[in-house]
Length: 44
Image (cartoon, rainbow, N blue to C red; front, side, top):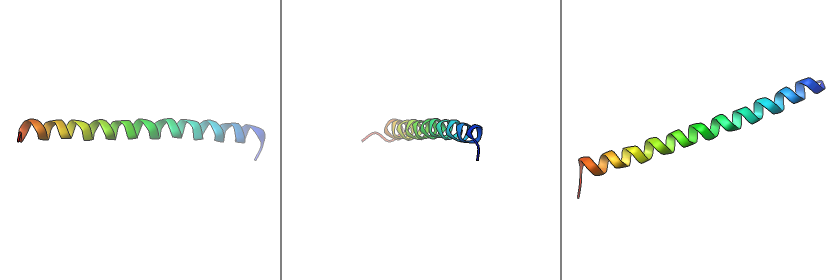
């Protein structure tokens, strides 16, 4: 593994972490919206 490979690996790892955060945020948004829909469709 040479220097350029290490740099590329670090860049890919950084991008992967950003994408994972995006996915987590999307999942949290979906869960929150599902809760809102449940509250509006089934008020107690």
